[in-house]
Image: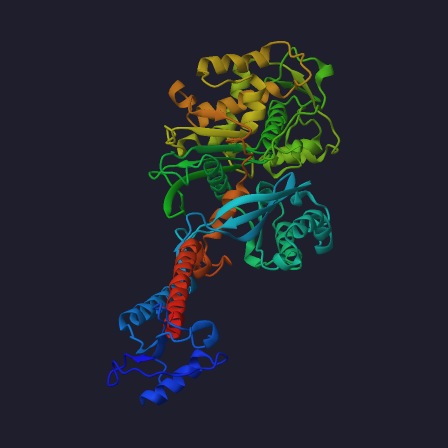
Length: 596
């Protein structure tokens, strides 16, 4: 044994060993012989320069008379430092990855998440529609985006109900309320606001019987308050006609993306139902309504005429024929009708199935002129100013029948329609309802295009065979053909000539589409961009932006929460960190055991 330890360096000793002893036993004896303290850094290097492991048996490791060396292990501080740095760097990567992954990155969503629903009831003159909407808010807008989820319709208008008690109204509305409730579920219904807007039928009832109209509104509040939806009494109302027109305008322009895209101009809308008509377009110079939709302010001109829906127009026309007959002193059962086709076949006077849009209920389409006293004079629109005439009417039974005799003449028909466009003459004859004043409308409609819907489409454009690009002269010729040519088609009716003439006259002389340039702005449609448009969509969009609408808290609107770093980056940090830590630990173990 030769020592290489400082202080005994070069000294040699001969030591006898037992083959069953280990290298560790030999170390203790050698340190005792050389007077060296036992230390973990002292080791034995064999003759072949290999370092012997402490647990090795001497009999297998040391040959007889061989030379072995006692030496001190050199501690490489640099290698230990590298091992420590590797471990610490790996640990740091893991910690940083975990911290970043736990941090939340909150940012506005480009398209907000659906966060609510709303129900709107359209109580019209001939039906009540119940609409369920899905509402979507984004951080950028107070107003929600709305998408229709379900529609349910009940035939018959609320204003026409004989029994308007709470029980009767509950029974009337129950089928659609139940269907809508089941679409949402009980847990969602109590957080879903519900509103009802009554339109022309109820506006007419307000004129005719304000007590009944008020009773219906108050009882509807009770019914909706017990419906299971979120309800406020102020959310039942009789809509002003101009508001109804404006909501329909919003619906129309949502369908064309005009309210959500700066590249699309707004389009005017015209709607004629059974009891009223609406005329609405964007016009800052003549605006009477203002709406803020998706941060943009729209100045709207909107006009509505009660008694100018197609059903009430027919009633007024028939009432005026009877009154003129009375004024001429020749009242009889026969009424010479100057707007009825001379050649219309009597066997064609029948109802037929005709595809109708949602906004044109089946009951508003009348194939025959009203003929009995009860049919003609039951409406507030046909109440006559002349008290002597009303006394005469009182002498007639309700089923007294007037027979319309076809007597079409262009001049006489045109003269008979003047009452619909001359406000003074209209006021002289009729007690209630609106009378059109063409001077109240802009001489040149401000919008570049108009969608004319409901009866403008079915009872004018569809009836005459209108196609896009028709000039005024060409359209007039088509109207005249309906009035003078033999009408033998299954879908022809005795009212076709009158309806085409009166609508055409209102468009030209009333709303001032009186040049080819203006007339070509009109697009008669049943749908807009493949969608049936109705005022409830515009209503719910405007309602969703009101301060009292129960929308979610701003912190929840249109925001998405995610990790600050992508999952892949987190995986890379933790993976590399683990490799560095493991490498440092393995190196440290080998250093400690003296293998490196």
